[in-house]
Length: 109
Image 1 (spheres, one colour):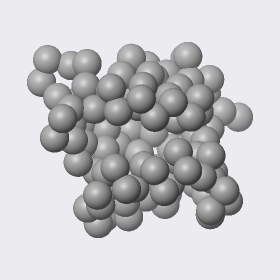
Image 2: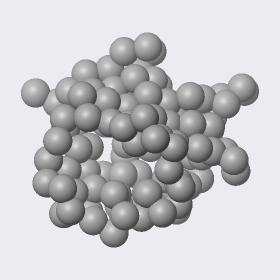
Image 3: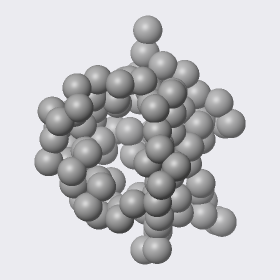
Image 4: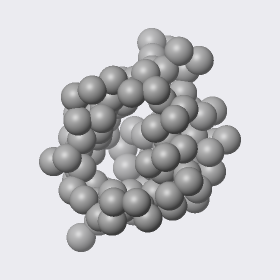
């Protein structure tokens, strides 16, 4: 059973999941700080290359199973045209002042 994106607790994470599922790269990037960073399975990656390859060029989609840490940590079934579906963990760091994500980390759960 998944949690509808509109029901996620953190408004910035909610908007990011919605942007992923709507394949809206512009909205996704608008939720990140200018110097945002990310990691996949513990290795830092080039954010722009990673989101294009793993999300936007491959029809990425998140079905959130659970959330913790006020909605800033998610367990989700993530699928794309490259890898199929996998159970993933996501953790988001919101920049001081809120409103934008400064870092996210993902990997297999």
